[in-house]
Length: 508
Image (cartoon, rainbow, N blue to C red; front, side, top):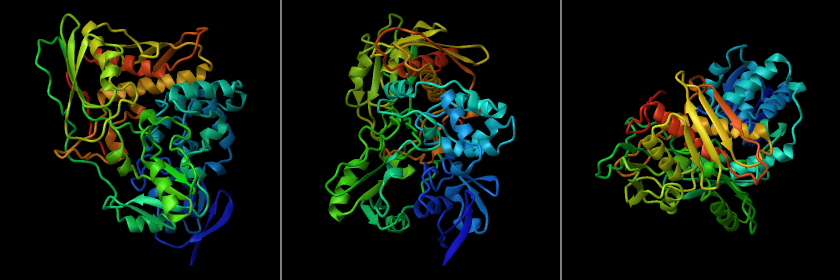
């Protein structure tokens, strides 16, 4: 039995079963512009399509519901090229994993309803502002007249900021960034992590899921809490942080042919350091060699939260003379990271029960140290120099607007650098005020849905302005310094409350 519907203006047939529209699009029809960031949670918006002109999240839409109806992906939008040009012109797309779904929803949104439309989406890279700017360009009809950029220079700056080779251009905004699972050969086996912790392999994704026997993860019911006690001392400022999920949108994926090299899960974005030690490539290689066929290995969103590294929690105090102690979850390299910018702070690594941590995550350790020093100085304008030599300043106005400046060598492409700095500013704001995941007494993460991470929404993100110094010297990463400076400025503007996040809101 088959089911027929219209896809981007043409009739298509798919097996008539109980699967989702997302599975039908990606697995049966090979449509790679729709992305799977959280399925079947229905929370990230990466798989958004139009069904008879109305936005729908494909991962929680049964394919049976679209029989005889019209489905439009970003590939079938009549103005897709204008959206892609606008997203490129403003820097509204970085890795490009979330942007096809965002473009689809914005294309169907009413004028002036951009922030409301974005409530259905999560973008971790851009900080939302450049997406708003792209929507305004399309709305004004001026997307086609945007100045052309040197996309090679833009890609060079994106690579410096993201830490891995990264493409920039209209194709990326439409989902063509070359993500690992998008490039897997037809007919590849599918490897998933089973409920018992063993890897299972199926001929299809549906078969592998049935064999895995997994139940979708949920949000925890307890609040996140800082797990480390403060060191004793006469402190003028103290700070305790909790477990923080990197929150990258593309779950770890890789594929490998027998005897070959696995495709990296870092295809077009650095995942803020969260995929440096991903298990996906090694598992794909092993399974391909065992089965004698190419194998796709896919981690679910729950797998990423349970297995992926978190930002190490700290408990720290600083005295009036600028000396202090930072207690931090034992993490290779974290003490050196802190000492790189704050030699006056003594580091005590402690063993605590919890998920894995990593010093590879964005500015881990040294950003916390920079924030603590900012609180000690109590200057409204916070200036930070990163270990690689970039300098950034940040200040929060009385109305909450964030102003940022960055000096990180030759800009190469100001649009790309500005986009990364806005995204870093949003991440710094979100980290201080809203982000954490709950962990139980046995160290297991309980917040397994993407909405439970606490990432600040578009409508709650204030205006962010960026000044870029134009220097004739070697370019270095600047957005990490911006991240630390904004976190410090936000903390100072709030009066340096002793625990983060400062405004945890457990919304659905």
